[in-house]
Image (cartoon, rainbow, N blue to C red; front, side):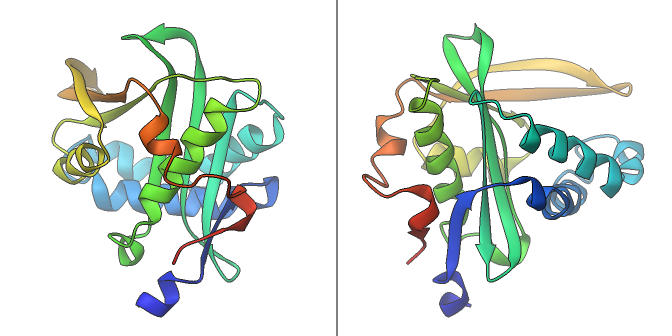
Length: 195
């Protein structure tokens, strides 16, 4: 597996990646959130609906949104996305909205690189993000540990309801993006290959 991991390219997503991103998202949600969120929601997830959503995001041409994919050959094995917030939340001006990696490719640094590329993109361009927040279902211990290892600090926990189910979400954040963006200095996303 290590030789396969070394050939993974992190690059900006394009409209042609919408279906592969949707597949990673739907599969990841069904694996990760079983027992955490309403099963009816997971069962009702449709690849076509998710593809249409990602196609819309990827063709919008907004500099306030960044989406990156992790690609092995012609296969998308993960993705990360983030966006500027219209209004700051808990003192953060940008949000990491998704980072999912297929289970068999996890724990190899891919998620870390996707987060870093998203942070770099949001801190540059016209965005100028200074901080980044990510929301995690509180029961998702793996995600919480991942973001804590990346230096995010717990900012807030808040209750909410989803289809009648009482849940708690945890907001983790980086007040400055320096630690995230420094992990890949001077390397354009299109040339970032995991080693």
